Image 1 (cartoon, rainbow, N blue to C red):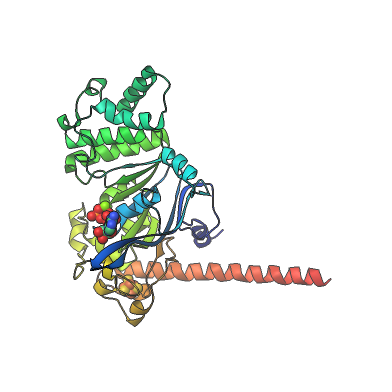
Image 2 (tube, helix red, strand yellow):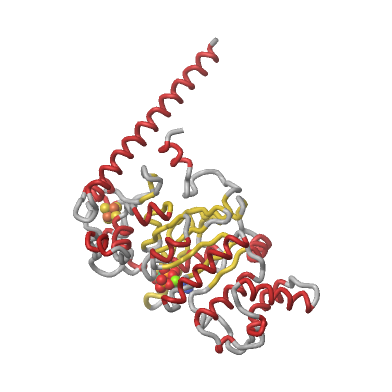
Length: 387
Ligand SMILES: Nc1ncnc2c1ncn2[C@@H]1O[C@H](COP(=O)(O)OP(=O)(O)OP(=O)(O)O)[C@@H](O)[C@H]1O
Ligand code: SF4
Ligand SMILES: [Mg+2]
């Protein structure tokens, strides 16, 4: 099979039939909030607006975007902490709808929160914080079993048993986040939404906690939706990355492609803001500064919501919302003018464009060859039927 067609099959979007190889599938998920905007008037705030993705068991999807683009809402809606306005959430290929299904799903899926200071009750001991989900879901027979499980969970996250009787406020930010992670692991989940779990931590501690997430994933075969606004953090831990802007996914692909070869103008501006470790690369990288602020989701622009900050915007961008299309590098990108964006050599070197355009031609050739084969097959079937 040609490389391009092979990529066609590595579909990270959900436009195919339900597939049990994917632990989590999200299909056309929408979460609209009614917001009071005057006397007796409410307006729909489209926090999450028609997003689709899927995550294989044991893998991580990174979700990045500016503050307010809908990352937390997407994670919470996916866990049914908010009732979805519309769309489907599938777990192991089966839709989660009824109360019973949601209850069962909650024992397999959980969340680690951004702020380890406010998410832990300061009046509870570490043992009680970690043991709380065990009590709620009644997943132990004896007190000894409960205590053994708490000790095991503390060991998973590198806390010693003598910490068990201490209170959360006695710990540093990194240690509190470890307590939060141990609590999330208590129900023995398969899937964890990690909502900016390292953003509130010092840079020196961030790496330790991320390494711990990585290590736990390998040991316990966990699947993550890892939310962050820092592309470097997300890249390290993710297999695939989705870039969100104003409630929509504008690009989704493998972590390497999205970070090394971002295609959507918004992804490229996000990436240009990441400092390059190599000074030579840093000099040649041009920072793309977006003009204006992210618009309010209450007054999202028509068509492509990025158009008010995009220098490649044309009339069509105001008229219709671009859908995610498969690109030759395997990423899906939502942009009407992608060819023009990539031809622009002022913020991407022209070699990248040629690579893209050659690959695109190759992809086109491979697809044409496949179409021809299918035509031939249909004709021979028709002939056989006539005989
Ligand atoms: N319960 C709610 N009711 C009304 N609006 C909400 C609610 N929760 C979130 N929003 C709005 O939805 C939009 C998306 O918010 P969300 O918290 O999901 O963004 P985010 O990408 O997680 O941002 P951050 O990076 O700051 O955490 C924002 O405009 C926010 O004000
Ligand atoms: S669709 Fe138009 S406005 Fe949106 S990213 Fe592409 S060029 Fe920019
Ligand atoms: Mg958030």
